[in-house]
Length: 237
Image 1 (tube, rainbow, N blue to C red):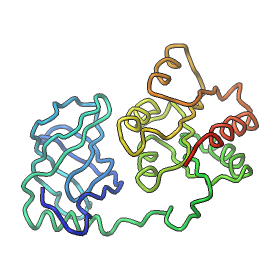
Image 2: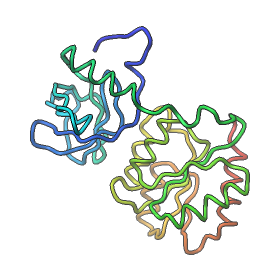
Image 3: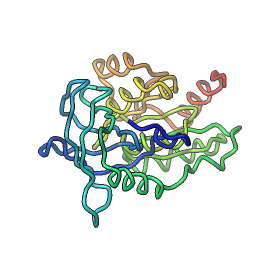
Image 4: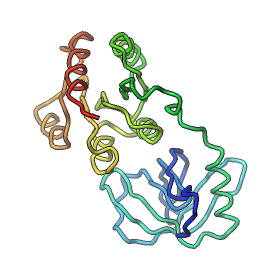
C-alpha cells in the first residue's frame, strides 16, 4: 500500500456501496479509505486471504476492480481489507470519490456538550428519546440501523450509545461486536434499550460489555434519562 504524506490514505470515511467478492458474493462497504475498506457480510473468510473485489462507487461509472488482502476478520459481521496493486487510474478514481464525501457534522459542535448516539429503527422511539435527552442538555445523534450507527461513529465519537437490539441490515449484536473490537470505540459506554430481553440475550450483550440493559415496556423516558445521566456523570474525559 502506498504511503501519502498528508495521511489521507489512512483516513477512513463511511460510505455504503455495493461490493462483489470473487465475482460471485454480494456484500457492501461500511467505510473506505484510499488504502482499503471494511466489508459488511456474514460470509466467512480467512485472515490473510487474497480476494478479487468489484466496488461500485457511482452508478453511472464503471466499477473499480482490483485485488485485496483480508487484514481483520469479525466473524458474522465482516472484515477489513487492504487494496493491492490498484492501477493509477483506479487509485485516482477512488481518491476523487472520497474527496466528494461530506465533512463531519461534529466539527462545529462545542466539545463541552455531551453527545449521545441513539440507534433505533423506530422513528417514534427516536423522536421520544431524543426529546428526553435534549431536555437534559445532550446533543443527540440519530441512526436508524447498525450500519448508519457505524457511519455516525466514523464522523465523531459520542460520550454514550443508546442501542436497540432488533434491527434489520445490521442488528444491535453485530453493531456492538464491531464496536468492541475497534480500538477507538471499544471503551464507549453502551446502554441497551430493547423491546425484549431474554436471559440468553442478556448474557450475550453483557459478554460484549455494556453499561446497562433496559426493556422498553418497563422503562419510562424519565427512568432512561436518569440512567443515562448516572453513566455520563461517571465518565472522565
